[in-house]
Picture 1: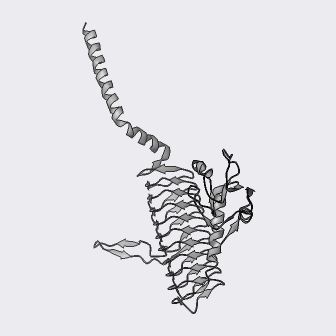
Picture 2: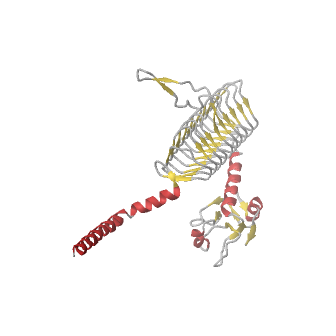
Picture 3: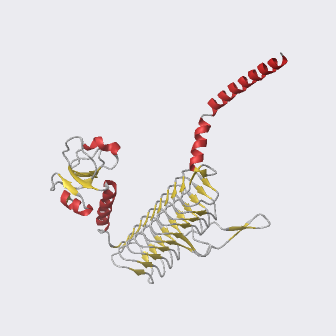
Length: 352
């Protein structure tokens, strides 16, 4: 597919500087783009590449003041990164629109209700009483269990597993290998030291416009629902335990584990490899630094780091102090020696 600078500017509401008829057919990074490619510049660290790039069209911020002449056609927008993301989304949608129909071999139960223009890839399994909305894409190897519901415009990438009775909203993206609705980790300890499995009879509900990375696991609730609210973004290889709630627009980085029944507010930010204990309340806008171990509730807007996690500002000061401990110890010993000398001098003076 080929697009002109004029067409691109219309899509992202940008202003053209240069040749409006310049065309591109692919994307490239600003530092290595070639003729016929579209690039963008958002980070000032990469500005030097703008003056040497071979990209035919470059998207830049409105407030960028040029230091040298540029051969490329420019499209100015308020936020180049956001505009480029929107453009990539449009491009991806056009590519996906080419996918439609049902590939064989695949299995669709006779009681399933399939919407309009749904793509069902090879080796997809769709169980009894499943509902799938319009324009949804099910890539090869997807499994959807009985009585599950999938919304419209949703994309399930290869190997995604949606267990029975789980619900996935509209415009959701779930990447390959992710499992939604496996049993929560519920076992009752017995007197003989063994564990009795507690049946997990709830489900998982994923609301609209959520994106979930590859190989993430979201367990079904013991009762009720494990809930991922609208707009949340989850990275790869995350574990969400039974009855957890993830608030609107919360973002969670890779390898984080969240224990059962913990409730995350909206706009929470969690760094990679964080571990969060069960039955906690994390307030709106809280921030949990990478590799933190959280064992207590967080107030709205609170930031923590470390294991066990504590106030971010205090933790940074403590880490800074820890790095200076050898020097502090040296100075302390010098002070101790000086105090001894002063004490000895004072004692000798008293005797005199």
